[in-house]
Length: 221
Image: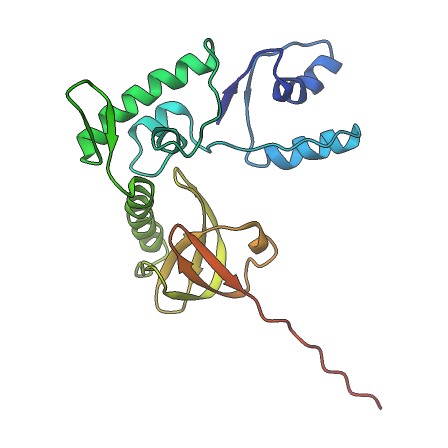
């Protein structure tokens, strides 16, 4: 992911800190997947308590054409109401939102009123997420020689946590239940569970995970 920021932005100062220390100034970086972890560690080392939120793992161009629930879609339906700047990245986002609306209309997920206003379909985010998970899930399952097993609302998913994959709709956990392959929303609580058996229940766009405590039995001689 490529991120462009202004020198007045707090994230700019964190990204550019290594470069500034060596006398080099930059305005564009390739952001690694663990950027949040690195930035938090950097701030902690300086004694700062800073919270960083990754808006999307996809750039604006990718989001415009995506079949998943993107950050642009979150803004279109009003879930993300953070203000946009009147210049720079804010302008790029506004243009991307307009292009995304055209794409959603083309895909049949939105319409425009007579006065040109946007009108997304009801349950747009959930519909797009399910659409992307279905496509990506089948592709990933085929690569592993498994059948894709979609998880429905209220359904319990159980199996081995193989790892994660980053989609436009967010980060998802890959589960192998021995009979099929499933993709379910990721949660940080799974970070140390990769390679282990997990169980959870699908609730809307999220999943509620349950973990059993393991007991170690010792025999005294």
